[in-house]
Length: 82
Ligand code: SF4
Image 1 (cartoon, rainbow, N blue to C red):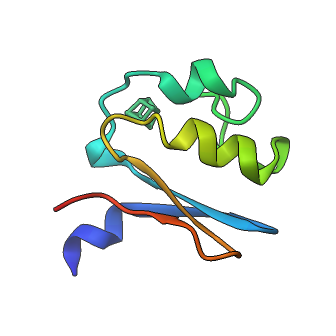
Image 2 (image 1 turned 180 degrees about the vertical axis):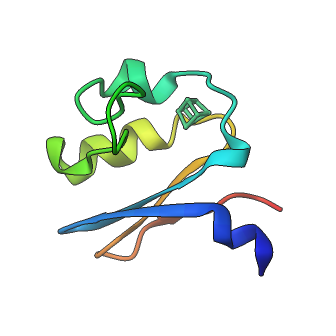
C-alpha cells in the first residue's frame, strides 16, 4: 500500500515507534512532552532509546494527528484512523 511507505519505524527493546510524516501537523506535543526523544533539529529526529516505554506511550498518545503511533512488545498498539 503506497500510504504505508511513508511511515518510518524506530524500534527499541519493548516498543516500535512509528512516524508518518504526511500526517504531522507540527503541533509539537511530542517535542514538549519528551524533548530528549523528539528533536526536529537532530537526525534521526526520533530517538526512542532516550525514554522508557511508558513515557513514550504517554506522550505518543497525545499526538493529535496520529503521525506518531506505536506497537509495544506487550501488545498495546496505537494506529492512525483511516
Ligand atoms: S505531536 Fe504529532 S503532530 Fe505534533 S509534531 Fe509530534 S508527530 Fe507531529
